[in-house]
Length: 271
Ligand SMILES: NC(=O)C1=CN([C@@H]2O[C@H](COP(=O)(O)OP(=O)(O)OC[C@H]3O[C@@H](n4cnc5c(N)ncnc54)[C@H](OP(=O)(O)O)[C@@H]3O)[C@@H](O)[C@H]2O)C=CC1
Ligand SMILES: O=C([O-])CC(=O)C(=O)O
Image (tube, rainbow, N blue to C red):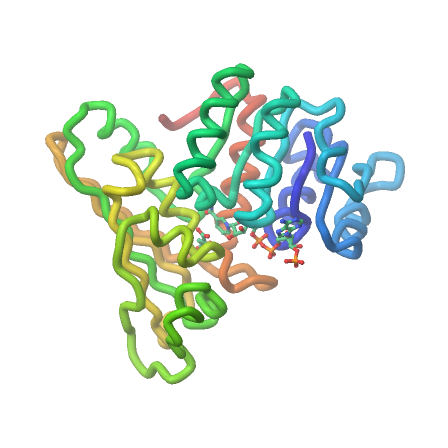
């Protein structure tokens, strides 16, 4: 396998290869930051380290899967070329697929090449039930309310473009409400989970998202509500943020690791 992105999630994923949690080889890694590439290499014994590459197109050689843990622009760069090179992809920055042209291109290429696009549950819970409910054809509403400390939202394009200053907040405030299609692009580093939920359920135009900035909240909280003919589903995850990136919940990295681990497992639990 190859890894694109050697930041918070990429480092945790690489460690899981290094310590044998994932029973497969990580052979190539890429990040635009050479120091981060090197610090991932340093997680491995010298004779078992992945090769750091300067150009992401060198990730494809001799591997069957490329793990993206970098950012939405990386998905635009790497997803289609990976699939065309005969690699499956696992996308953490799934919000990139909110752009319908890219989404269609990725899906069509995967179909044509017979490859798989994996989107892990990441920092949310309940995709198993939402997927099953969607199959019944009468899943009616799906909503996600995400609450983060302002430090977990700062720098988001939507806040910058609308001149929203979160440092002045003294109580929980809704900063965005709209379809997942808009949320994923307005908050590209904060709400990739909305696209995972959309793909599992009723699509990004119908899935509604509310983002709350709360100076009293120390966790990244994701609350899902879904209703339909099967009844209703509610899940809440109160995630501990990663120490190296408060925008990213620790569970997101572990979710990707579990997905990779179980690709080769004999017993696979969950829908
Ligand atoms: N699906 C889910 O549940 C979740 C998804 N995510 C998403 O996963 C991704 C990784 O998160 P995280 O590890 O915390 O992020 P980090 O910022 O810690 O690490 C990302 C790394 O990738 C590099 N990078 C970003 N874009 C590119 C690019 N186009 N080309 C080359 N290198 C690039 C960054 O470099 P630099 O430092 O120079 O920017 C950085 O080294 C993010 O998009 C994040 O939003 C996060 C949490 C949950
Ligand atoms: O880690 C989280 O809580 C969710 C997140 O940042 C994302 O989906 O992009």
